[in-house]
Length: 373
Ligand code: PMP
Image (cartoon, rainbow, N blue to C red; front, side, top):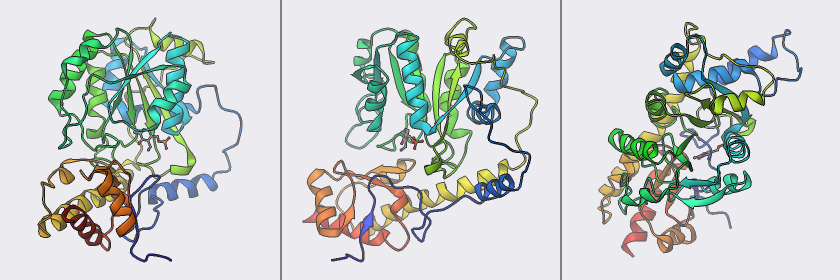
């Protein structure tokens, strides 16, 4: 029997409009039309590292002004560039395999919990696993605890996966101070930071703000990789559009090893090159998505508080990005699915994209009934 009020807040959820429909960004539609009408384009093979214009733009979108810093630092030589990849997952895989095979890395650290595919992707990329002791377990109120003492256990030279923003699955990002502490530990233990940026702009509505942790590490002189996904911020879920940004602080470092494997030496940044003039439209489209999600967070918290649902629900609006840890335990989450047809993970994680003005009150009521019975 079809349950009319069922709500899907589970896995695989892409952005949905207030009407619960998939959304093609107007800026993407316009670009597709322009491409379809451009008879000068062809389907020739690309260089080994992919389409340079694309990976340059992606790298610039991540690093913004720090790109100029890198450019100036080496008198004309740029120590950062992009590699076109199959979405964010492809960037993680290519980066992991390079670090394992070419640089001989064997151990990677990850936050607990983390995006469920991190372990699989890195292990298939020839890594051994290790739990993250740099950013500790989230505490019961879903605030990152900063840097626990256990971080001293990290072996020197290991790789550490860091969520650039909108930590998946908790929605809890380190504060600026906590990022500084994390950077200190990483420097002290000579770890290799591998950022995963799957939500740039999608989290706060501001492309620059959502990449501030990555830029902080670049400014501090770290070598790093950053996997970029354009699934969420450009709505290109099925196109598998991604980039691996490589930042080196040393011409003989990892950068030169990557370029050994390419068919040309890249100088990607042209610091004087302005952003394309369609960027404001792109930012408008991103803000449309992020503000709808932020509004749903506010509405869900309000509805829970109006019902006087036992507990503190402030974490719903403190968290950021696509996912939220509700705080429901496994039994309660299963009750939400079985009794109320609100589909969500056993861990209590929900995708905010599935919430709409017409189902948020129903979901709040289901949570209320679940925690009070
Ligand atoms: N990293 C994180 C943290 C993610 O949440 C996702 C997508 N859910 C990805 C990477 C990979 O995304 P994709 O391969 O679809 O670009």
